[in-house]
Image (cartoon, rainbow, N blue to C red; front, side, top):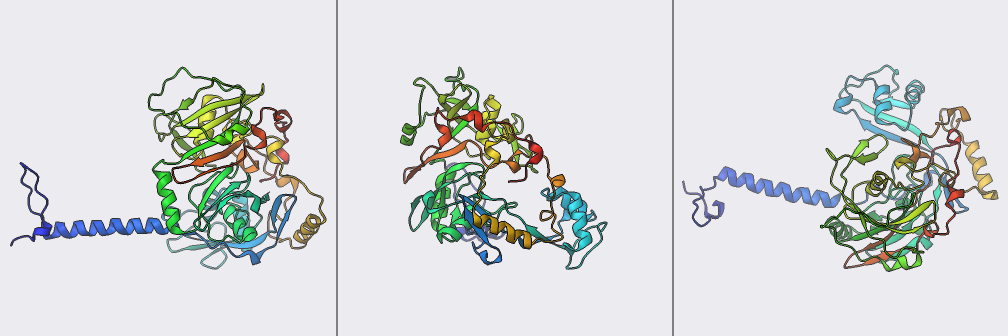
Length: 448
């Protein structure tokens, strides 16, 4: 039976291709349909994961440049995963959700804060295939620096660009929900549904671009993924960063530096770019840390150029060519010049980056009184004493106790737009880093 002409393969000169069967034709059409559907679903993922609302469930205080959220009740739900079947609920939760200890989950099972299929269970209970877990918690969000209208760099119908303060995450994660950029924009500035098209670490400050509709989000994501955006960061690192390197990198094309750098003291006229091509790999899913690994690491590239040196630390211009998680921080550590106050990658957990600011304002005192009145008896954090504080371990948990690092996204530029911020105060050569980097008693720190 002859095959329809539209099902035949195109014949190449000098080559006879066999006809395509109806089955193969259907398979190819189905594969094309699946590809189109996958692309559509990928675009839909750019829609807001949550609606930036629900503020009525708690109270807020913005005072002294710090945003605080009163503790509030929240429930988390999870269906049993295949790897959990037959394992103790308490052991699984302690392993998978490391923000709490095993004792916390055991107590939660005993006093009813954890439910399986809507009913309490014994701490020894093991997961079954159809189980549904509910965790009723009393969430205590850490304070963050307040996001205000002064942080807006640019706003139009399609996008908003802000100078993100350090300490605040871009989107809800971990212990943060209302104290995140997207929620703060909705609560403080009535800008709902902002969609991040790239991310900055919670501890990093600087230029953050967000779309206000799905079409713009797709467009900006495409530009970033195709590496058409030049990104520049500033970092203050330990030691005297080298002016030049003997290594040659033929593939590196020196970028045009942003004009906003003219505001920074530059005591070096003959510095050149130092390029790091070291691949990196995730070393801890629990703490989200990375390290250089030539064998199994993913390829990435960052260029650095020294701007000034004050005898103790250097201010460095960073130009990430790829966009791996933590690549600037990892490459600086591997070069032997870690960001000076980055406790996760060779820097110090110190007085300067474990302090957000205290305020004796009457509003803050009243706010704290209300929190004490509404303590929850079964909440470990409401009843936490000094003996229950988790000592800070800078090598693994430093980021949990840290409010900022000296890493600032100063400029994002492409052919369609260019956005930059003023340099941070720590980027000047006269900045007093000695007072900032004073040692802190790790045993007295709480999670920030």
